[in-house]
Length: 444
Image (spheres, rainbow, N blue to C red):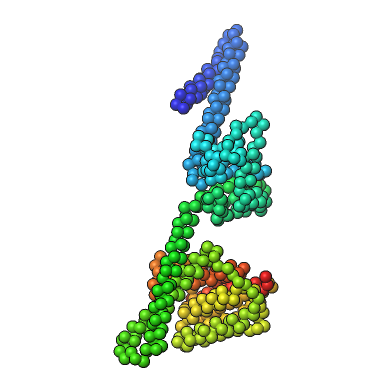
């Protein structure tokens, strides 16, 4: 490389020297005698030769710069742990880095193969093929499409991204014992037409992350199952002591301790059930038994169960859902759990006023709304809602152990979406309260 740079410098200086001599010879034309035209011709020839050498030198210098930049780019792409593919506007593949080859062709990958391939030939069955003279640049794309078509229609996603000029994201794709995250983004030439000139596809291997998440979920599931049995025994025994031997316990401190044990066991069982519900919902192990029913009776039952909580705080609980609200197609037990979670939250954060349950019929769904007159949620905390283990507080890094686990809204979100609905915070204003809503389909 150093020798090439020295040669280019020498050629450049030689060209400039010849041009200079040529100009001097041309100037000598005015001071020459009979040979002045010969001197002029000699000067012009030197200028031409020097200019040609200079331009050839510049061309080689530009080529060297382009080759160097391409090598630098390819080395950079090869160093990425993220798979990188480039397609032109006709969906013909142009470049694939080694990370993408490792993910898509794990069996065919040859450690000695080039980092960035343009017309490498990969065939089914794990063997590589030397490129022929009549190579088809779309060959490797055909193989990729055949491999990925079993789990995702990658070609349709590419066409959609190209046609609609939008980024398509596939968060979790199970492929060949791997879990992949895929981003498909159009390459747009920002002129007055915003012309598409191709696509870039990024593939991230998230297998380790998924396995870690699965290990945590399995731990919570197993631990929750193991905890529920002794906790249920404690709750049952303390309940029997309170019911049958409460009058015989004369020591008020001892009686209070038994009641505390019972209340704590009930709370722990609720927490364990939340952990189990979360694990099952995330793993898709909960089957929703959907049926068509009128929401009025179920809403009235939930309100009756929660009235004691409102009496303790001296707030009003209104139920405005009637039989005229219409029917929904959903899992009755899961809808009851969602209503209980949302109304309980409203009661918990309301000190004065009321909690109101009402509905808003939509064209193909029924929207159920829960309005409270509580303290409201600050705007900067609203984006923390419906997240796992997250409480809406001033500092998301500090957990209030006296409050809930932050699973109620997260579980409700998974259940509503599992039944084909949507849950969200409609509005919230500090000091005035909040309105939560969720929708349920009216028919199958």
